[in-house]
Image 1 (cartoon, rainbow, N blue to C red):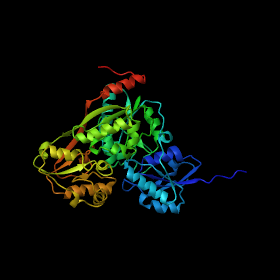
Image 2 (image 1 turned 120 degrees about the vertical axis):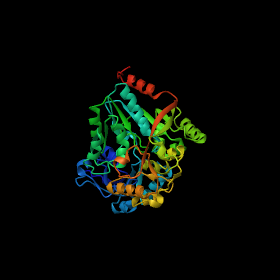
Image 3 (image 1 turned 180 degrees about the vertical axis):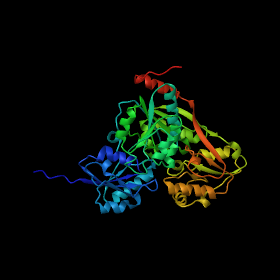
Image 4 (image 1 turned 60 degrees about the vertical axis):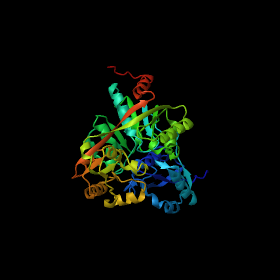
Length: 451
């Protein structure tokens, strides 16, 4: 009688997104492995939960605990773990190898799962928009693609990279068609930043935990699906057209970030964004790396144009700048469109909020020492949103520049005058995105409306 092979004990390192997807796709029904824990990083307040048995499957009747990544060394020993799997994104290579070295030093092996083991296949054409770093301007590209499809009369929805930071069962399959849906799912500021801009234009967004079921639902109401990637992750769904956005403000990150370089190499089209505010040296570095790592890609260059609704509230004023959280924290951007708008419109002073930071916002500045004199829009849960509001309240300024895609004034009580900053894509060289999309649609047998 053959002996049963002992299962390989696994810990999946994650950030509430790629980790759950990799489990569902590769480990859930795999008899060779037993996932004993997830660890959580990057996002506050997502450890201490449990991946529920309803999502974990028959092999995990009690679900799977989620611990803080800081406990990884102890967890490897406690559970006699043989394999650690890295399953989150937007890391520089040095960070990846520090994590690998930690796992190996405790005796475990280290794994990265690739597209063939983790990508779903769709019955509908998929256009994926990814990036080499978070904050590259990917959302403006997704929005532009969506506007093109809408103008051509093509039914489409957006499937967004996951951000399940609350009740995982309630968030298994999320469909956002209205602002009320954002309240229904108790969305954080980060989620609202990604969903609001599509919802206000009448485009349905799907997200959640179980992307096989999400894809099935999305296919029912769309002829084309846009994968809107998060951080710099590669797609969960196999793309038929892959667009990767590169940021010359962080030139050189495109070939030393994970999985940013993966996206650079996989892209059919590489869009160099922010060419209007990048240095010549940064642009040349990016162009050189594209030639080296993906010489066959089609290259488009574009400007990121900043629009301000009330410039008189900036000129000659002391301003507090609130920027997109992930971009200026683990995205290593340091500052964003709000800071640029303050300079452009001649602010008297950009007030440094660090001395006035409250609660977890203090910890953010201690962890991410590269951040400039701006306030990251950290709002992962009600407590942190209150801390963000308190920090804004206590910072001595004449007006507040909100450079977040979501309208924070709808969520927070801000007693000072508010300036909204938005940014749009303007193509300057290479084939027009509208022509690229139209050719793609014809290739897949879809008829477009001509006006």
